[in-house]
Image (cartoon, rainbow, N blue to C red; front, side, top):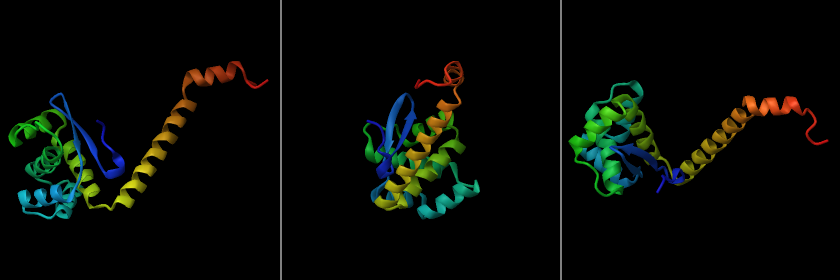
Length: 145
């Protein structure tokens, strides 16, 4: 089942399996207990480019293990993240995940609507600049006649 971005969920493909990361109070609490840091501190570290690799893994592992069955053990999960995503990309995902966990439902819904509108505009722009679409328009400049 794909992630529901309206509630802040994110998809994570790892080790040939899909995980839905859903932020919740319980996940945020687990992250803070595991790391000894406030989630906002971890977000700031990520934004500065100075997060600890273990904190990134703890964030994503907490999100995956709270909402999915059969999540690899922490060490294996970290190895998969490192090999398949790289720690910088995993850090970016962890930052988004934690930020989503700090937003209200209304804020998440507004953000999801904004992203959806941007994706639609981008798709329409790509379609308009598609060479096939342009050549068809050039062949028939008055398609409605």
